Image (cartoon, rainbow, N blue to C red; front, side, top):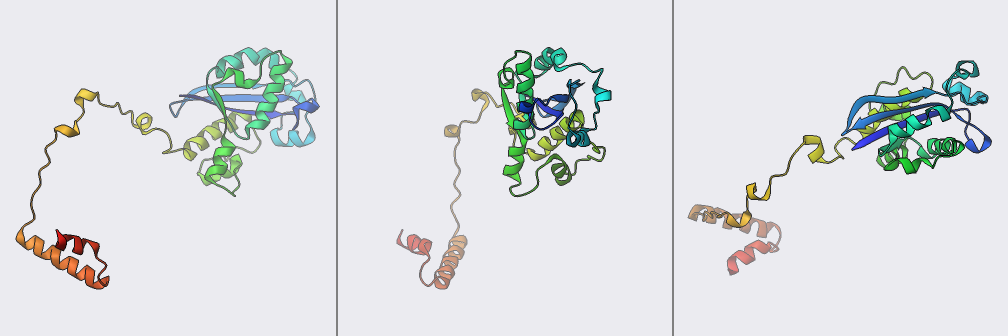
Length: 234
């Protein structure tokens, strides 16, 4: 199955207040293997970032002023994610911004271009209830190197999220997919009804030892050994 991990950086917290995306990244995975294909752009948001957002991503207006706008890369983005499962950490945040940007260029909401949207934060909370489940905490928990993550960057975060997802879900995917097992055709399978069961009767010594063992169990359980009474009555 094709999966795409997505992350964005923004000018603020709420697209309804006019905030925009300043960086977008998507990383492709197929059958639990990173393919090396990714989609990554810095974007001119046509507005200033809030001070709090700037502290998180460090993308200044001067750096972004000559970058493309979302409308310039929209078609390429939709082509990259088409039909894939999208995995996003705290999905409502990024999906809200992406839906807003898509709406500005007269496109449908994000869910119309992918097979499904999965929130990896929900997965993390189910596996680690009551614990911190942000990306840094998960990297530390699964011993994934995030030492280069001094500031938030969409491409690095999408790549880290893919690694975290693999660690969180290890062993939960289909064994057939993991081991590449092909089921045998029915005519090659062993049919149980054609097997002949060989029964070896117990010898005299074995029966005597078995009887003694039942006696000991019955004595220890004060006459509650069911198998002793069944054996003696048969």
